Image 1: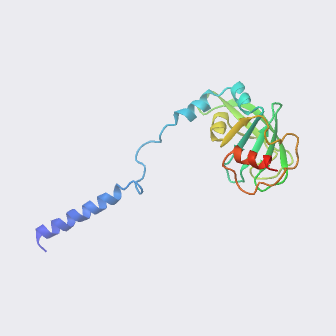
Image 2: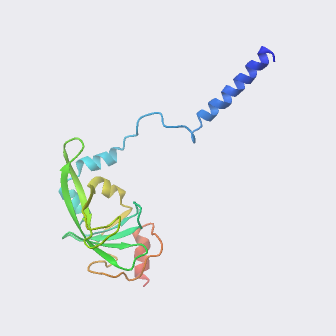
Image 3: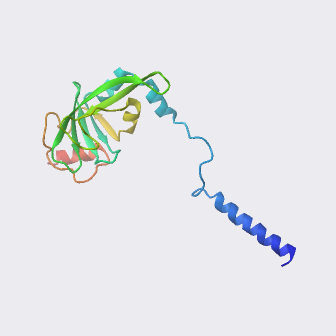
Length: 177
């Protein structure tokens, strides 16, 4: 093979390999993690009073984690009523605001939940605490009051058979019953 032919093949191979290496779908991250200032600020600046106001007398939808979607009503006095997709009973739990020391040595406000007598991986009798700022930013939906009438109920009006995208979908089903 002539030197010109070899150079041409080598140049073509380098271009093909270079294009593959720089393709956005296959490229590995090359820089540091992207800062998330809103999340960081919410975590760092949460106060116990703000966290209490954000959970007291609120209905909220939780879609994260390995378990089923959960609809909660958290009362002002620290009770929490959880309705899980696929379940007919409403679980009675408790919530509290706790302050601990964060990774940088300053105070870290946490929202803690527990459900005495419940033995599920995602809901049980142990206090499960998460940074309040993270918790509230990860909620799928939240609104004031108890529009689903979960307060003091042990049984749901019906079983949620599909995971709702938002509270409005659940409210529409409750109204139509």
